[in-house]
Length: 156
Image 1 (tube, rainbow, N blue to C red):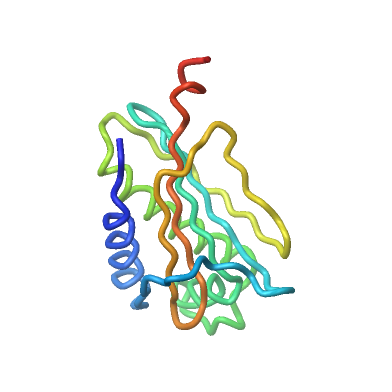
Image 2: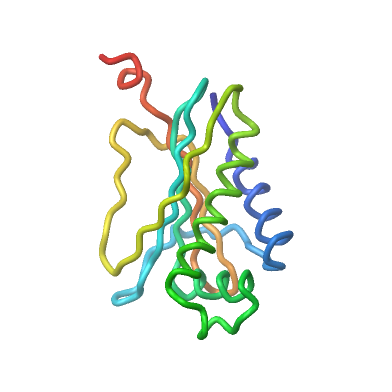
């Protein structure tokens, strides 16, 4: 099952605009952290008729801004757990909207969030089937969709 890049783009734009009041614009370049720039990755798993992973990567500055909006505080006053909760919730909403495009029945896991300066998130057995890079007020954002490899799923 393929989710079109257009669907990923539209879902992300709508969620960020309706929930946060922020516009995200498709970026031509893949977001990558500048040296010393912290990044965060939110991740949810979809299981059922279709199996895979949704990840949302963004700069720490953007995650802090999201938390500030969600918790009604200035971004500088957002606490670490609020930042992680906010990015987890945005990942959860994105994953839930993607899940609705997939064959039923499907379940969505709780979100997890990773943060750091130099890290890699790996989803063993997953293959990238969709990815869109965005810019949000000068900060990088990326949404990725990985599908569980059929050979892995079938135990081969």
